Image (cartoon, rainbow, N blue to C red):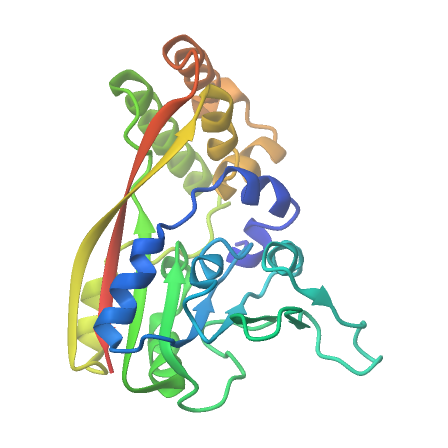
Length: 280
């Protein structure tokens, strides 16, 4: 059975180019809920830094924690960090420093949600974007509470797939996603996946004083080509194609045909982000 880190190895740049950017309004909601106008933020399962980047100019500091080396490398470039020397030359792997004096201080560290390596009570806000379903919640939630300050906020958020674009294209994408899940499960290619019942797991942990779920919308522009890139940024599709499954079998060829016919130019994509927030 593969793990979630291996699932996304080898195509970090393609992932970064295709995936949506969380909306800035999400950061504003979390700052208001935490009562922290210039928070210290920890982003878990940070990937290529798409979620960490929305805090630029808002947070005092952001620590992006990511176990995948390829993802960390892209995140460092995205966040404007200068890579430090390799281990053995006086630095920790995956770390870096921001060049701008007085701006949000970014760093990218190797670690997991279950074992961040961070000190107690170091964060006002902890986030997990498109990531909590890969966590072992029984270990990750106590770790999150440990690094949060009293009154700090944890937020796990995911966007709905696919974005709302066009009814026929949306339906084709949903069929593609269903086929990918079925095939990767039957072939043993899907890592353990906890599903998206994040609010229930957060509440059941008994570790937080208050938890709730809200929805935040986001708009981007995209065409048929980008939609196929988004489809190919999903780890299951990549794993199946590498295993010799055809584009026809996973529904990618049908999605490509329908998107090419329906999306003849850039269209507005409407993403819905489901945000589960909890207060320590």
